Image 1 (cartoon, helix red, strand yellow):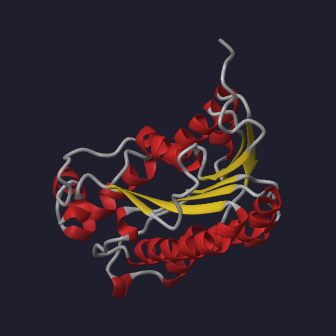
Image 2: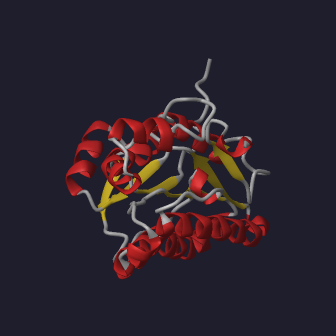
Length: 253
């Protein structure tokens, strides 16, 4: 039997926040499906480890807070995965305005810049996939995360505009909306959440992170990667402008 051609043979993907967590899981899944992957992250050491472990990965060190550097990234991309993110937990009246601006720059303006950069190539080829790693917090709000939630809600709107503009050119755009995923970003915020809520760290996981969900566990990065694969795979051409919840029943309330 002749092996089937990988679904992303001769395609190039760009993944931000690629050195760990969800980004690294998606990079591995893209490579398994035949793509050449531009792995973008400011963590150069993490990118080196990833590139040594996974073939077809080109490490591209870049701090997405530097928008001029974002504009200089490669434009010949068929699958764009906007994944990079950061978090800050504080009451609104104590929230550092500079931190607020940084989070929106990395999590909303950089995805806009990357879409603006790569869409002409997708339009020329008559095919493209934009996959935005949003969050349940793109659909719901929680206290003490004003910047993160503002950025994710903005990403939801940006994704829908890309879907409408790209439809005539064979380009789709969607969001994936997981609840808390077992990543370094989530692990780092447990102490901040404990301090802000006035509870211990074990209670943060039980009450804050798992309290709203019916499925009482963290989402695994590989689960998010599998859903991303649906959004660039054979069934993807009519999935556009959508927000796909992977939230353990959070939004069922």
